[in-house]
Length: 259
Image 1 (cartoon, rainbow, N blue to C red):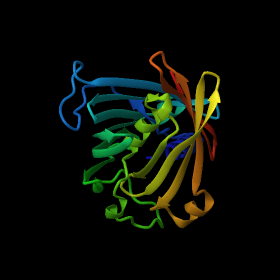
Image 2: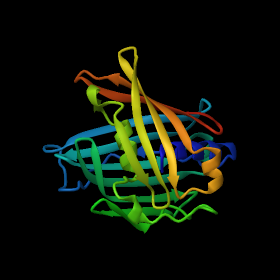
Image 3: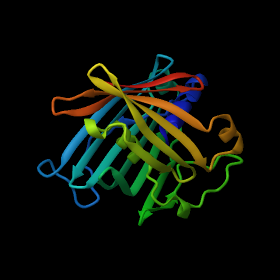
Image 4: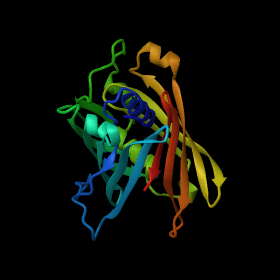
């Protein structure tokens, strides 16, 4: 699920007092694309964010990742909180593994499973030479949405890989240089980060998410693109760290702020 789709669903579910869909981290040993990474031979990174809609707390986000050479493995958990968490608790555990070389991500396996209000739903994608294979889809296609042939989505990445690529620590010279195609089992889209602008000691990147395939014609006509901003602050090691992601949703400003 893309960043704009997450924000839209969060806002919509809050408005109707149901569950807020978010991401929250699940620290654990993760099977990498090449081998089981250990503390001795893997780079590890984790992050935790709070999520708000119109300044109202609705959930949390975090992720944990192990890297061994070019291989990466990310494990994440989606959960509602606040009033939404009381009325309709929801959790989504997701993981992905793949290879990243020179900024190009090649996922190999993506799995998600939900509990609570949407219990029993989940998705699974495999990738064969960059072509996604749908083993299970996260949800039913939207009414009126055209069917997307996965064979046309070669080179696309899964939702968790995309979120990791946006929110991971990056070298200053590599910030705001992201161009990804996404596929979630039903829909194809494109997400970019560009146009770095100085903001104090850090920078702000402008993101653009564009719906492409698998969306009802009405949705494409109403809002084919979403713009979002990612704010980065410098770390002592010279890298930049994402501290906030913000975008306007149908129900108000949505923000992910790093804890």
